[in-house]
Length: 511
Image 1 (cartoon, one colour):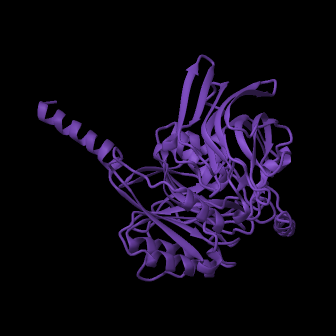
Image 2: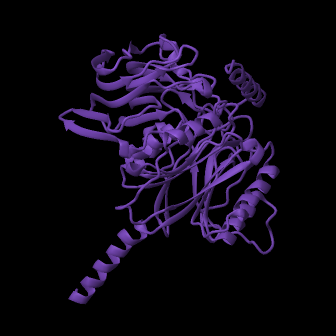
Image 3: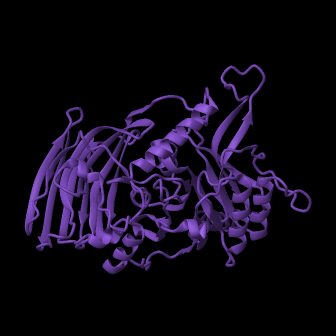
């Protein structure tokens, strides 16, 4: 090979490897309150896509917000729609909208795959049903299909025999895709990050939970730890605690994010954001204390599930000005010890106002995710409405009646975890009163390998007066236990009853 040929190969490699990955990306993630029927949602999707006037590369819709239990057959990969004649079926309609907008469009549907004759694994319905993401290319063709692996209940859905690990080649680089509850598991999300994928499409219908797993909190911690771009579109229903969408840029934090408090009136909100190619001088706007308060007031009535902290080791933080150092341990195999160093300033509070107390907590064990058990390893500082541990999963009901006497000048949390990348991961987990996280620029998240141990250190480097949670949140997937294989055998009347019962229970839990 002569010198000119070598130069050509080198130039091609540089262009393909770098230039496609660093070009600006114009995205629109949709926070959407679904209607009851597929036809209503399809009309709303059309309205949303047509309302986006600026050039857009990606339009992302949330989980469980289009078909609403009506199962659709997904066209083969690379199948192109005939937009001149047939737009009557839903997927062709969305495909043609993607083509007309010259954009990549990601949706989530109930997918139907008919069973082969005499298939004993099929169940009584005669077909397999999946929670499926479908991505259309700029020309309207189907370029990716992902079937959700980690189901959150969803007893009417099946899972595949092996997980889908899906990458999508676009003219803006390579993207991975996963759905909602998947974000807490190794497969498929970390399979993708560990193979080098840095950009992700993420449809969700998240149910927020205090004190560690509200929607934007979970999205930022995952993006921050993996230094990955996360395009998150959330289904919104504040009565049951669903909502939360944004564009998260790894160690830089959220370029844009929201939980819409009054979406029933507006039906949807489109977050349009430019992800810049040059990030060396990137400055991300950070909320002021006043802005944090305004956001928090608007979501006062947002329903939030409560974690079960009864097994945690905890200690009430002494609310006096000065420095506090503690080591709190939990568990035996393995034993987790959390080292806390806190500097705070405390001002006297009015007796007629509410104010949060705080606890140090440590836990190494199993958490129930309603339908699954999952291993967790946690070191954290969490808010409490009174001195009991049980109150540390609640927030005060009226934001206007809260005063904030505590200023956290600095926080340092350090802990050692077993160095096992096949099953364990740790995340920097924070929450402010706005249900947004502390920007990464105001924290330091560090990792040090010590033989068969990994030391994680998380520090607050800018004082905070609206703090709810500051924690290292770890997952230990070796302890996970799925209660059943969802969807293999299904009684649709029972599913309907369960869904109604869960909705009623969620409403009752508000009181």
